[in-house]
Each structure stands twice: as structure tokens, then as C-alpha cells.
Image 1 (cartoon, rainbow, N blue to C red):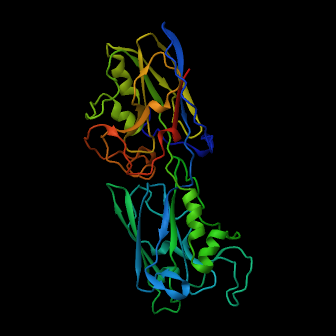
Image 2: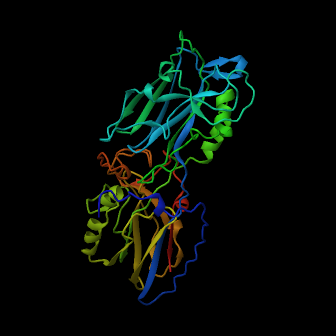
Length: 410
């Protein structure tokens, strides 16, 4: 299996917007060896953005009824990203009827072609745009497309500086109003920013805030005319969230009291769980499990990443007294995996998702899911750590297990 297992195309995802949780219908009535089918379905709802937020003002400005960034003042934001992602932002050119600063779509480039983070002065990425919703002289309403203001050098009015931490894959952007003393001195309004989700092949939203040479939208208009971010923040909040692919799932039928795939509280034993948790590669663990005397069968569901809206399945043989365990990678992570936390007996059928949990294998340093440059999603290799296996906590806003994976046995 190739290392870059999570390179998927948007056309292949068959994305589902919603899903229905099925109730658990279990019955332990099987007393003789039988063939069953276990199904793994990716039910996550993809969102346009993996992260988003507001660029706050600094100085209270009474006529505007809020805060602004005056000449000489700076504001910073932090965000995570991988090499395919970009940062989009927008803030009002305050001394105008309807102008705003923003970069080209899909945003400020964050990594070069070799995958190295771009740092330092990136002011050349900022442009000045005319929203086309008000006449620049009279201020009367009009309806023209968004166009770039060509006679003003935006990079002389706003300075952008990027810093990067490789371990966390986190950027810090400092925005400084440098318009003081120029012919175009202006305050900057509070702004908005976003990083688009990446599905392994392309950005989910390659035009995050507006489309040049097309009519504007209410969210950008509110920023460009009044410096108000409420509408855009509401839209971003509704369309921001962590998504993921899943790896092919390994299923084992075994006897005894110990789950042969993993054991919480202990470090990875080097038998193949790391390869699943970091890259979705089941081969090493599959071969190891086949060698164990208490293992009656090892099966693999699927042979490619399981994109949102997709499912895979495999049949397996089990008999009275057997138990079932499974594992699949949380694809857009450094080293996480889904596995059954509770025992599943051979006679159990129906929806067993409630017995599933998300675990950290402790073999790779975590980064923001779907926005970490050392993740397999971006062709990276996790930075090594050696911690005990444990359930994933609440450091990141991860959807619940039931919002990502559905596991059924029939």
C-alpha cells in the first residue's frame, strides 16, 4: 500500500451532506459458525473550511461604533495549515465607500513547491479591491462586479508577516497598518480569515470569500461598506469543521480476553498499529495477527481510502465464543485510529458504532487534524514520539465518533 493513501479526488468522494444514526440492534443468538458482513461507512459532513476566525480591531473608534486598526498598529492571528492550503483574509479600507483588502483566491500561499513553509514579509500577497456596491465619489448604491483597485499599491499600506512552527504546523500572521503618512492613510476594520479544507487532491473551496469580476455577496459587502464582520463570521462558523477520510479497515476474529490490536496505557508494540495509525497501511499488522494462536481470521475491508459518503465491507467467519475487533485510521491525523473500545462477541449484529472510540497511538506528534504538514494527507511523516496509547481528548474540535464512522454487522 502506498504511503500517500489519503490522496483522493473530490469527484470520487460521493459526499453526503447528512446522515442518520441507526440504533443498535444486537442479539447474541448465534451458536454455530457462520459468515457475516461488517461494513464501515464514512458519514462525516465535509465543510468548506478547516479553520476560520476574526481579525479583531485594536483601538476603539467611536464614529464607527467599534474597534479599528489605526496606522502604526498591528494585530496577529494564529492558524494551522499543510502545504496545499492557503490563508484567505479580508478587512475594510476604512477611508473608502466600499473598498477592502484581501489576497487573490484561494488565499496567501503558505508553502513553496518543495513543501517548505513561506515566512517573513508576504505583503506582496495583499491586494485592494473595489466591492462595486457604492459609487466611489457619491457613495450612492450601484451594482458592479468586484474589481482590483489598480492605481494604489496595497502592499505599501498593509504589511503582512508570517512566522511558522514546524512541530505544530502552526503559522502566526502579523498584520500591520503601514498607511500612515501616505496619500492613502486609512484605518483598517476588524477582518475575517479562513483556511479551506483539503481532501487530498484539492481545496474544498477555492474561492472562499468572493469571486473577482462577479457581483459581491452580502458578507463581503458588509465588510467593504461598514467594516462589519458579523455576517461573514456567521457564514464561516456554519461552514467550518474538521473532516477526514478513513483507511481500509482491518478486522480480526479472535479468542481470549485481550484485544490483539491495541492495549490502552501501553506504548505501541511495533507490530503494525503505527503503520495503520500514521499511513493507513494494514499489511504489517495483518501479517502479525495471522501468526497469533488465538486469532482465527484476519480480514481487510476496502483497498483504498474511504471518502465521506463512501463505505467498504468484508465478510468474515466466526463461531460461538469468538470475538471481533477492528481498526481504521482517522486519515487526516498524524497517528490516530478508530477501534472498538468495548468487546464485540461473535453473535452480535446490527449497529456497533457505539462500541467504537478514537485513539491516539502515541507514535507521532499531533497537529491540527486536516491542517498539519507532517500528516500523510500532505505527504508528510509524523515527528516521532513514544507515548502510551490513549483515547483522543478535546484539544481539537473533532466531530463525535457517530458523526464520522458507522460500523454495522449483518
